[in-house]
Every structure is written in structure tokens, then in C-alpha cells.
Length: 253
Image (cartoon, rainbow, N blue to C red; front, side, top):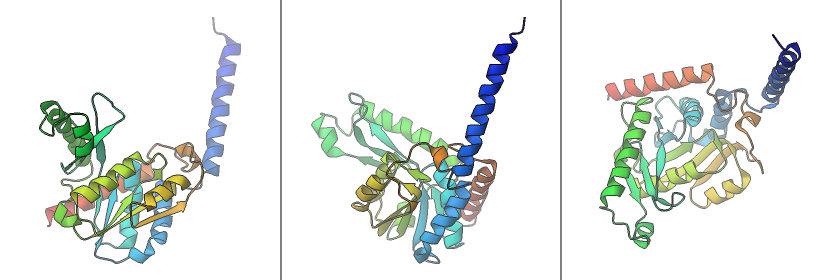
């Protein structure tokens, strides 16, 4: 026997949730990461046409923003997806021993390792690094056939892009990794949304921070992007175009 009352309540709840989602989309400052990237590129206009500039995106959402930024700054400006992952300490998972990037480069914090009695040649540590490296290479392959080399970043102005910077862990790891493993001339952090307190912290470690809004509280992704955390169909098209352009550049190099 069908419980009509229960079905009606479920329908009402679903309708209410749909209406709330539609209201959030109308209120979100950015209709998509494409729009956010266009606005961010205008704030980065001083780097337009500069052959020394390289754009690196540190997340999937950031790759959409970064792709738009790179194309608006100049057709010859390289853009790479550049994910960096921490090496967590087995005994204390919240403590980082360093980081691994999609190009296979490794940054080890020797002071932390030594304080814990961990040798850089420790088999367990090496296995851990190898496992992280495999995951990153698989992730990187969805965007490029290759990752940027030290020669391609040396002496360049590196614009590190994400779609939203709140906790800042991903961005901080990327900055430390670039400082340690590559001789970038300048590092510029760029994001449509960057938490105000974090913005001040990042400014102490890079040559510039460029954003569109810098709120005291960030909250849910849906507060800023109409599609929320999901990558929209139009944004997936940008990622597909990014993959095609990057690999054509690699094939013709």
C-alpha cells in the first residue's frame, strides 16, 4: 500500500531543495569558472604578452580558471596542470615530511625527518613516495603527456592558479615545492576567491597575490560558483581544449 502522505512530503522536500539550489546559483558571484577566469585575467593584465610567464593550475577547478587566464594573457603562454601532494608522516599523519609533484620531483623536509629519526633512504618512505608519484602521474596524464621541467620554469614568472583558496594547504605546498625544486624568478598566486587572512599569509612567501574577492569567510563552493564544486559541462569543454592544445604543443616541440 502506497503511503500518499509520505510521498507528498518527499516531493515537497525535493522541491524545496531544488528551489534553494536555484537561489544559491542566482546569488553566486560567478556563473562558472570560465567567467571567474576572465575576470581574474583582467586583474593580471600586467603580465599579458610576457614571454617569461608560465601558468600552473593546482586543482581540477583551478585548471579551468588557469586555462582561461593563460589564453587571455597570450596565446604563447604555457599552461600546465601541476598537482602537488604532501608526504604524510606515518606516525603523525597531520605532519608533512615534504611533497611530491606530478613531474616526479620530490621535496623532503630534512629537519622534520631527522627530528623523527627518519632517514631519507628509509624503504618505507621511498615506497610511500613511489605510491604518491604513481597517483600523481595518472592524474597528470588526464591533462598532459608531460609535466613542466625545471628548465621550463627556471627564471620564469610562475602564476599559480586555483579556483578557490580557503585552507591554503594545496597552494602552500605548491609554493614550497616550486621554491625548493625550481628556480622560478617570481611566484604569483592567483585565484578568484582567496580568504582574507590567508591572503596576508601568502603575501609573505610570494611576490604577489591577485584575486577578485577576498572575503573574511569563504564557506561552501556553491556560495561563489553557480555549479558548486562540480565541474560544469562548459568547463569540461575548456579542460578538453586545454588537453588538446597542451599535447599538440608537446608533439610539435
